[in-house]
Image: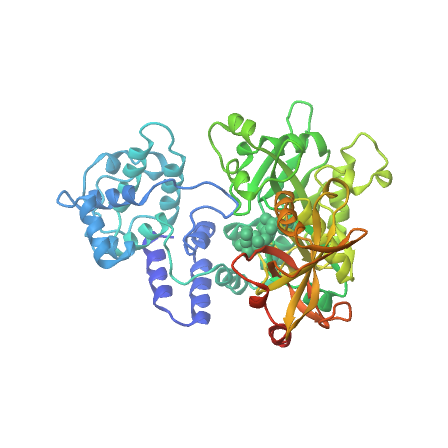
Length: 582
Ligand SMILES: Nc1ncnc2c1ncn2[C@@H]1O[C@H](COP(=O)(O)OP(=O)(O)OP(=O)(O)O)[C@@H](O)[C@H]1O
């Protein structure tokens, strides 16, 4: 397909306001693309490479302006291009405003190999093909080392030099990832289904496993439904991560009856692809990808070592990489960032911050794709993949807590149990909990209802601390659980107890603050003079016979002391009732 034809179709699509018509135009474009189908299906979304491929053009806007300026003529500088951009606001319009062609220069003669541009082009477009544009961009992406930026500008100049205005408009946009003609992923999916007469959901599935619009389009055209259905995950090519929505425990239990509850680790999402030694002389291949499918293998040698030590079968695992201290306790997210995506001095960075992977899902094991299996089956499979690599053999005898790298999963319909898992997670230094539908399949790239991160507190209450309990074990000298009350006329009525969200350091501080207000003690329990006000977050307020107010805070969480408030400024019973009925 000529690039001029592509540009012309892209112009029609851009001018079309109706979604259905846009799909029809994209359908026609890919149906007519012939041997350039794969590239056209990507270009129309503004993509040069498939989504699974981390390759980038690695060319900044200024290099692109320079290439445009050179192709536009000796009187034009890249500053002029930039000035015009500031005026018109969009690189496509800028590129289209110049008259290209006929410029003699390094790129015009030495476009090299596939990107070669005939120096004799009249520059008014028409002889450039979609394939040539792609192959030149491929060559541009591959340029590395000293002089590579100049080489990239030369190659791009060579392309612009052969463009008509309209071709230049879309070339500039593709190069700078600013296509913006209203073609999203769903549009291309529907267009493929329409063009090659295959069901949309099967195209969708093929896209989920391959992350490759071009390949799916080609297979739909050449091999039809059978071809699409036989597409499987490729170990080594990343899959889009399933994402979570915010949600409450109450909603989760209402919808699913039972929830799978997991700790929410405060790290960075990773997807591990491991292919064990296939033959004696070939080494296992391990690749690690970020949530955005960027390759981060070299930055995380601990994850590669983990895979080599623990995995015996081919697997794709979904999880989180967490920074840990010398005792193995989790460190805040900021610490992981010092390691994630790091390209230089990885060994040194590793000495400063250690990371470890925790996996909560298994998308593929030993040749079998698991996306369509329920979460609990995938988790069982994850467990067995991690146990199979162990020397101690008998999987049934191994306790989940002893399996390295396995995120624990509880199944329960009991809100109190969920509350205690949440408290335990916070106590262990994690972010909280995730709630998942135990029967749900893995939906790549979806922020669906099946995964929920427990909703952050929407409101906080200022409560008077009227009692507390001494802790246990290493916390025996600290007050640990605090009784909370609201004002009700001249009295105080209890609404709950807070124990979560408090570090050891903070407990020590709070004990010092409250100890002088103790009025009575019985066993671990103490009564306190109502002097101190805590700000607490919560998930919801429920009617409850347990506390004297008749209400209980569900999932109360310590936010901070309010030294600026007296008990008289604490929240009232009326506010509690109002919040409960909202
Ligand atoms: N057990 C777990 N299951 C799923 N995800 C988990 C788990 N533990 C930690 N996570 C992390 O939590 C993320 C989802 O939470 P959250 O939505 O807060 O992430 P985010 O990246 O900050 O924001 P968002 O996904 O909303 O853009 C996952 O992408 C994953 O990185």
